[in-house]
Image 1: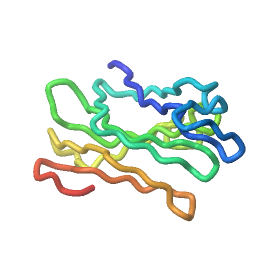
Image 2: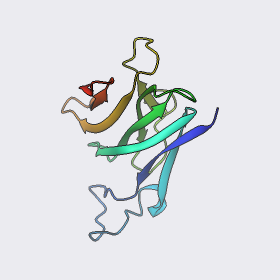
Image 3: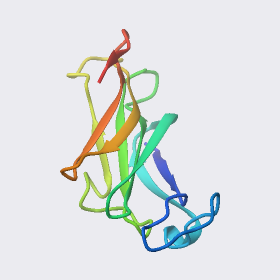
Image 4: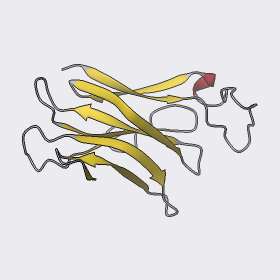
Length: 135
């Protein structure tokens, strides 16, 4: 099994630090890129999305494959603290997955959107199943 990575670019400026448009926020991951391993044999950055939390954290959604020779996949969400480190309090060491398959073989789920809720939670959306339903 190979580990895949979800990335959060340093494009989000914290309230107390203001970078010029297009400049990375040096307070996030030292102005670099943060990444978090996703234990999945396959990972696709299939139209990934990111959202900024009120505390300067960043959550990124993508797709994690289930195994070789299958289209089975699930939403994969990685959350980074405002300094770019993985948030160990989110999911399993900073990564959460959402599986819509109900143990069905070859059931695809592609995470495409994420937003922060007023109560501090996160909402994710995407397409699921062969009929491209909304998940």
